[in-house]
View 1: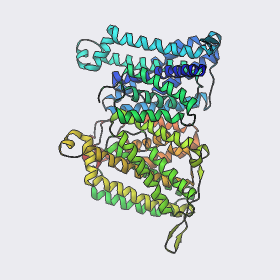
View 2: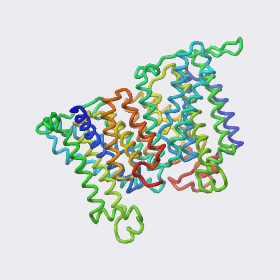
View 3: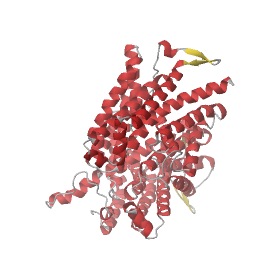
View 4: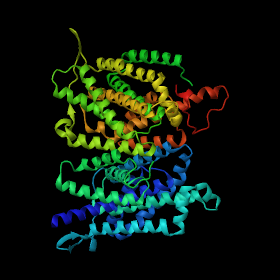
Length: 286
Length: 335
């Protein structure tokens, strides 16, 4: 019984991380109609920045602020000087550009930090374990779950309860009209992309101590985040929550129940959803 | 517009002639490199049938290439005495099967969604190849020995670099010509028109789903054939043949050469492999420079090298070419 509890918590922690990654991806896709292949590469950059920061200063907390900030600036620059230039050429070129950027970032990471795993060591309260309903559980994993919930709630509040959220949703519906009302839509889009990048950087910082930091981490999470988006439905925040939970738990219990098949389970789920409901569980009809 | 149909016949003849004479002028390692260029050219051409002709951006072309490569290698290991023809036939057959299954699942989606799903399926194939190590050799890969060709009582030795080069030139060369011929058939033109206006083609009574699936399977078969030659050439296959990196490679080859023309990707493959071999002598981080070149081209010349070549006549006659960054693919330029 305890084992099931532990594994479902493991699943929740991974679901939290998956949500942090896929929320930014689905936000950018929903708002800008750009599928950002470089999203996971930015997540990896976040993890590596955090590694450098933690090893030089020994402090984890500052990287939670600074790394997303760096990624925010990087995201803004990418949108302003690269993505906007190819926007007129259409969808295909945007995809190709972000794919090329992901490739470059991965190679840069290999060059700067080396092609081997690095461990981010955390100290203090986060590195401890606590007693929880009769089991001993690491605090850090609970912290990941907490972060995911906070980000999810904050995003939902911003999107549906603030003026900024109204502007964002209106820009998706009719960008020209919003532009005519005196709102700088290109600036809004730059902000959305930068925010998405910052979110991926934040996810990277969080992932560092949970998983190891290595050049293949981007591709690994990218595929899982894609599955989340396919299963949950494109551009749907609620879908991202549900699909992250589903896949996090599936991964966790898959290792417990079918160790050999665990990697394929996620793909089987994706194939199943594709056959039954191609638009995803929460997606609008394409 | 540069390659009209007659001009294309001429280009094909010249390419075969140059290809036939090349081994007399080149060193052994250069002949080996040329062999590599030829089968990668087929891979790039097949990819461009998806990207340039049908407008389908796939990040999963390596699943065909890898399936062909692994099937060819596994068949040689598991079936003693298998002839090279049946070996290649099996590889293409497996690629066709993969194309049918994956295509019928994925082709219901379009655009970014299709791109994402192909990447995910490529990863699935990679995971299967890694985990199924009893067949694929896992991380260690598979070593094979190239069989000889026997036609009746005649046996042609294929062990040498030059003899395998000629074998590749003939078989893969014919396959590339067949791809070119395919683009001129009613089927090939249908695919092009579906890209331009699918609704209209539907309205005219074409079943666009079937057409797209057929194209997908056809490109898969061509990539599988290229993959089989990859195994036979290196006499070794590892999981890198089915990894997403192999898809990135073909994307770069096709894009550098230019997706707007049929011959662009062949040029791209040539340039890519030569540049790669020079860069990899200079630095271990050559993929970084390849990535920079790619992003530069996406930003500045989306038509690739063939776009520049197409502009040259315009420069001499004083006409201004296309606006930089214009998508050059129209029905006339591509055929």
